[in-house]
Amino acid sequence: MARTRYITAEGEQALREELRFLWKEKRPEVTQAVREAAALGDRSENAEYIYGKKQLREIDRRIRFLSKRLDELTVVDRLPEDRGRVFFGAWVTIENDDGSMHTYRLVGPDEFDLSRGYLSIDAPMARALLGKRVEDEVSVRTPDGWTQTVITRIHYDPLPPVR
Image (cartoon, rainbow, N blue to C red; front, side, top):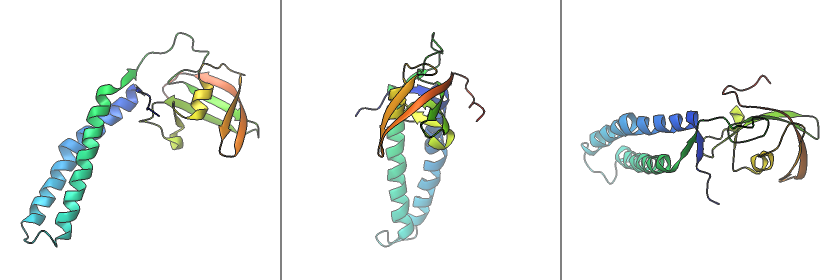
């Protein structure tokens, strides 16, 4: 499945900062370490050289990915006209059928982080929430079967709501 090309302004800024860090700081540091390890002699048995080259390949792969991905992303930096519905960037509080409450922000797949409450717009729960209003019931298929949730709050503040 193709990943959604939407991202929040904060998410784009984080990816750009990661790219800058890898290109301007991390890669030159690892390149210097590889250069120093190569100067020690036989490269075929030099663990520091071999590990450094592997690290450079991983850094270069991530730099290529970030550069390409940033070119294709669309930054969503405006609030929707109808803030009573769930759209990209919304903070949504739901109550599960067991009474537990959870708050999620619908974000792009490049910035999801459940520990912060950031749910990828591509996740089944996010797809089910899109376009819904407060007090709408949503059914979502989980690995344990179908679960019912009710939307209790929707807002578009950039900061997480009080839990």
